[in-house]
Image (tube, rainbow, N blue to C red):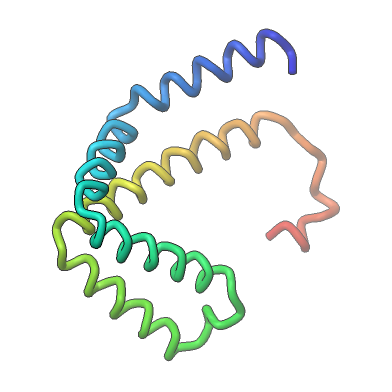
Length: 117
């Protein structure tokens, strides 16, 4: 990797780590980690949700309702809700950064549009 790109990458990483979004995420994570049982429940849901989102079952109305009810049950706990909200905000920040970087270079992928969308 080019030295200038590496330096700028480190600056970007530092800016992300110094962001309000990251600070709030780290704070919510520390609070959740202080309660191992809640951390375990949250991690189990996050894993299940990830697998669900990336499965063929995700279009099943019954599976969607089941995930919705599980999510709502967890979110009744303010500690878990705070963590999941902070995680979502952090993921959106990272997605914006990633898209910004990807859009800065034209990779000439127009002919592959059908498989990329």
